[in-house]
Structures are given as C-alpha cells and as structure tokens.
Length: 200
Image (tube, rainbow, N blue to C red; front, side, top):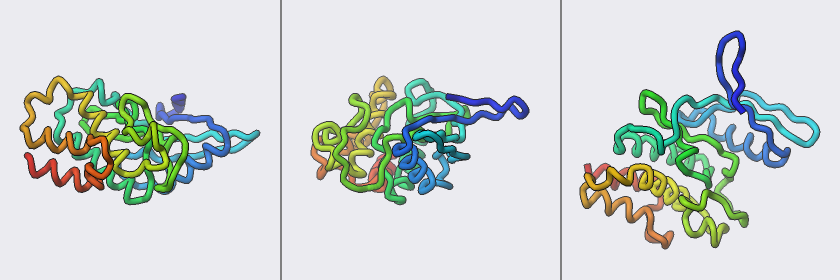
C-alpha cells in the first residue's frame, strides 16, 4: 500500500506482515541500510501478531516497461546486487516487478520479503519464470549464483527483442550466467560485471 503525506505529498510504502516475517525483513533491511538502490526502512510498528513496515517509495516503472539502454542499467544492477551479497543477504525473488527504473535511469531493487541471510533454506522461493532451477527443486542449494541467474534471466527477457544487436561475446557472458549447473556460472555479481565490461 502506498501512503501519501497530506501536508508534504511525500510517498511511502506500507507493508503489513505476520510478525515472524516482518522481523526477518526488518533485520535484512537494516543490514542493507545505506546501499544506493535499496529503499530505506523508515519506521515499523508491532501489534497483535503483525508488523507494519514503512519503506521509502521507489519512483519509476518496472524493468519490463522501461526504455533505458541495457548496458549501464545492467551494470548498475550488478553493483547493487554485489553490495547486497557483500552484506550476506540473498534477495531470492529477482524479477521485473522488483526492479524499478526512474526517469533518470537509476535502478532500485524492491521487495525483500523473500530475502534471507546466506544460509541454507528449505522453502521454495522466487518467481517461476525467472528462478534458477535449484530455487524450485533444491532450495537448500540457493546461493549468490541463484540470485545472479534470476537477475540475468530478468534482463534477458525484458530486453529480448534488442539482444540481436549484442556482440557474440556479450551473449556468451549472459549464457554463462544462465547455466543450469551452478558450478558453471559466475560465482559473484562482481565477476559477471568484470566479464561483461571486457566485452564492451
């Protein structure tokens, strides 16, 4: 739910969650505080077994509706994802509706409701169309490469009609990130960013 301050016109997002899920998301958002491209947690309230979270509103449109060039946006997202992983958080549900692009071309990752610390989880996560195979069939094996798979799959699908202009080396880099076997993918978002930059 989007709330608008009647006095200032400022917007914020209100999320209402069961207490255990709200506590987990608050913990993760606090760990990610200060990363450019991640909405700030503004406040939270607890009562009757539920938690209300108030988050910074990300202006813009979802990735599948934006017209920004691929390269800079893709690299900016990898910077953000690398910073998230550096703080030992996995997003676990990267898809077009969770990547917001504003009018200046800046990217924001939203909805860390499925996020978790980098530890084994048994629950199936992700949006099926973008999730790595292990997210659906072996969720305990979900790791950084799984987030990277979902991130690249998201960009691949959103920019599919424009990929014909890509160099073969660029397509090879994206294909490696989408390998079905985790061991065949880039280990980190920084590794993928470096490989992509070498193709430009």
